[in-house]
Structure formats: C-alpha cells, structure tokens
Length: 155
Image 1 (cartoon, rainbow, N blue to C red):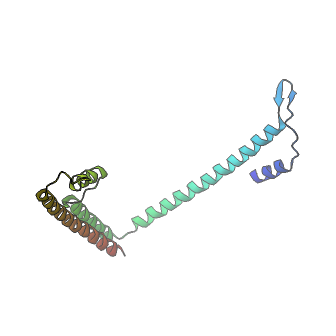
Image 2: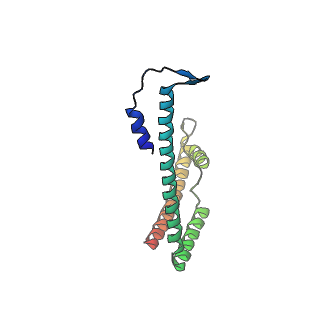
Image 3: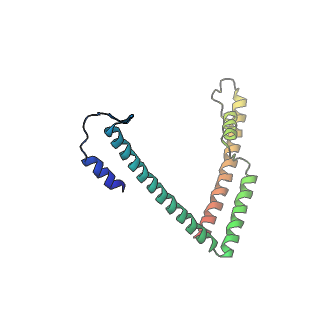
C-alpha cells in the first residue's frame, strides 16, 4: 500500500503551491501530497518496528526454552561456581567494585605531588604501593582463574 502511494505521488504532477478554497476550506494539493507521503512512510516504519519487536519476542522465547532445557546438574554446577565467584568478590582485600572507591584509593596511594614527602615517608609509601599491588594482583588472578574455570565448565 505504501509503495503504491509513494509511486503514485511521485508520478503525480505537482504544480506550484496554489491553494484554493472549497466551501470555506483551504485545500493545498502540494501540502496534501507531502502529508500523504509522510503518513505512508510513517506507516511503513511502524510496520518495520512491529516486525522487529515480533522477532525479538521470538528470540527471547527461544532463549527461555533453551535455558529451561538445561540439565539440572548443569544449573547446580553453574550456581555453585557463581557462589564461589561471589565469595571471592566479597573476600577480595584489594579490589573495589565501584568507581568512587577505586578513585579514592588510587588518589591516596598515588598522590600527584611527592614534594612534601621525606625520603623515609617515600620509602614507606613505596612499601605500601608494593603490598597493595601484590594483594590486588593476587585477588585479580584468583577472580580470573575462577571465571576461566566456570567458562571451561560450560563448554
């Protein structure tokens, strides 16, 4: 319907924007043709969106079907791995999981200006940097290993 309207409107000779009065109503054929073309294109866009939403709903339905068909043992194993990962997250000493906390910790550990620090204070700060970096690396490696084990379990 919209393609036929597009072609019909494209082929129709449109002259100047001469409006004329029909019983007190102003009729502008150029404006009418443009409005009709816009309406046809809008209808086509809505039809495309409906098709897209239908496809997405079908995709979600298929995913639900696939997830419900997982063997019960796989779900139990996956839940156990997720619980282990959550425990690691809760016990990690050096990993923060929000931007504000990470920024604050980094700013306190690595100030931009060390001019106010004595040599002894800079040595102590270096030791703190090393300890924190070591703990962070260990915690991150544990998390990475647990995630890798979980991914291997799923394959």
